[in-house]
Length: 587
Image 1 (cartoon, rainbow, N blue to C red):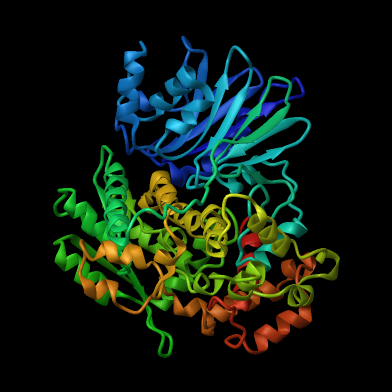
Image 2 (image 1 turned 90 degrees about the vertical axis):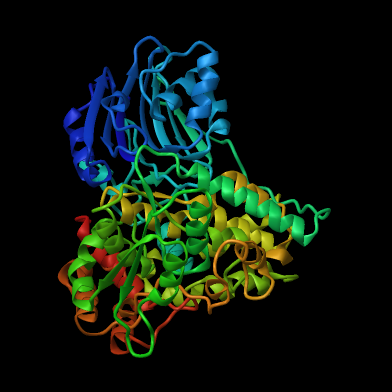
């Protein structure tokens, strides 16, 4: 797990290596163990390294192989790299390291773009071919690892984070009105390739991009998620098949040269990971939970349930308690760690949890993705048989309708209801005919990528911690797509996953009320947190920017606890987060 960056010049000029160094420095937390730069002619590659798969210098990056004419920077983890290494060895390739980076490089030489189909894991990489002058960028199927870029007629720059591109300079930092509509409507999700800034884009998941020697850019999809129900199995067969897939996904993510712990929230998903790791024969591994102060009657921790799981499997359990004062003190740093503005309360939770975890652990498994893949959210049951999937989904998920959006932002930025148009286009795509499947596919391939998964990547990597997400094993996701939707959303959701979990973890964790990773102080803005948001929205920089309608902001500030979205978030926090993120990055 690392940070990668690079630049390609198209104007005949040599690359300014100082720009590479600034990008690397901006990503130092992602790779605290080492760094490197490779520059030749019109291209330079930079890397910050976190040692997880190979603890030796043999996996140092950028990795250059003169005999093959390839140079690579890679971020991620290929869990089946031992099997691929064995296959490549039979083809005559020789290896000098024990890690997965060299496997990626030689897989490309052996199989070209087809190697992407062979990788089981999470990845974003850039690879330069000496003989063709071509550079290839690729991102894993479900977008677990990020990859941003900025391009103009003179150069093409890329990095693992958006702020790294800002550090290099020369980026158009104007607000993208399409992305702004998504941010304020689609629960802060800005689908690839857009970001909130005009000058920065991100490579979509399951895509690769080639930049040829003349600067021509081509982008292609190499994988898509298709829903086709297998009606021949009964419920018992589905449950056993699911357990088999889950066991394989968890075992794969134990492949490392370091110990792998678990972020244990106390919910079904993370608890199941703990049980499956113990079942795989790992003893006395570390688990970690975080809790916050309650606000009114809303609790700020789920230690009751995480304790049950930790006791059941005799883990080395760590409980981290965060006071409101510490939350406020660390809030600006957590916002600065965001590659893009993210409103979810979980961000500060994962940021502070990751800080503590990184003191004793380098890699953890985390439960993100189970709700999207197995139908755990409250908006899926209403989708059953819906004659208007867009309306049903929008009514449950969108933070505001387009009429309200028109009252939120400066009139010059109001164009069209881009968020609704995007969802409609996604729902019309072939490969998911059932309304529930339409929502599951959208959430798994878009919402999940740019909310929960991005949140976990950003907040863990802010402390040099690698997060692995077994529920996003692509074979598990493909298996889930063959399940009848009714087996997922029955009851309160995730029915089949819960039934499978009964064979592994205590029933008290499964039959509990559905919870979430709560930070009440960011839902009910009071005291110093409210002052922080108010100062950001009413300060000189926000006034000069003129992004939001001042009367709308004033109404929210007059009743800071009254304006809550359908998903239980604060509309005021959503505006304040965006403005404070822009200020944190000097925009």
